[in-house]
Every structure is written in structure tokens, then in C-alpha cells.
Length: 136
Image (cartoon, rainbow, N blue to C red; front, side):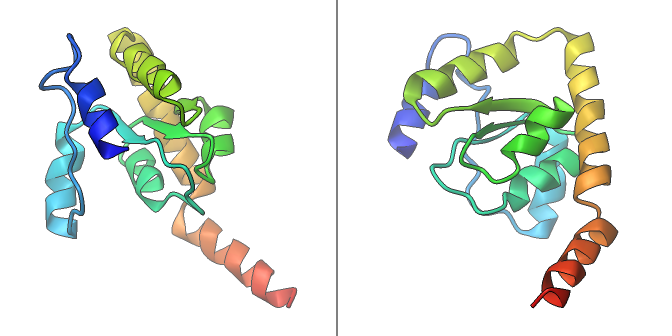
């Protein structure tokens, strides 16, 4: 699957605009967030999506698959693109993201911050965990 995505990244207009980072420690993450416009995770299964939530908290719109658990929040807050996991769907999402105006990107970035603050702030997540464990 990675080979397929890397091949897509070599299409005209994409060369040099896509990075496959792999694991990043906290120090490297800070630099990474400053260098990217979108965080992309076309996963076939992701039970929460910590990395996309971190990207949203940095004001970075995401491109994720519908299989990432936070896909509904991304749709609700219009802070990124949710695609199917097919090659064509991911390719279409990437092309759409690269074609947005600066104004549209800024709005999506602002929505990313709002989503992260309202849905993924530590206090909110802690409260949800407390409620979940109280029911058991």
C-alpha cells in the first residue's frame, strides 16, 4: 500500500510536495508540523487517530479515510477531507487539497483548531474517559 501511495506522490504536480515521515519523536514533530500543509492518513483501520488529532490541534487540516475513528468529527467541523480507502478516492482527495485557495485553506485550518479544542482537548477526553469507566 505504501508503494502505491509513493507512486501517486510522483504524479505531475505532486513531486516534492509529499513526505512519508514514518515515526517522529516529540522533537521532530514540532519541526514537522511547521513544514506541512496537510496530514494524510488513508488507513484501512484506525481506532482513534491520535496523529490526525495532533495535526488538528496544530491547525493542520487532515486527509483521512472513513476508517479513521475521528472521520465524523472531521466532516462535522469541515477541517479536512474524508475519503474512501481506494486508490482513486485518495488520489482525488489529494488533488482537491492541493487545489484549494489560500482563503479556503485558512478557513479549514481555523476549523481544525476549533475541532481540536472542542473535541480533543485533554480536559474533554479525560471527562469522557471518566464517564466511560464510571459506567463499568
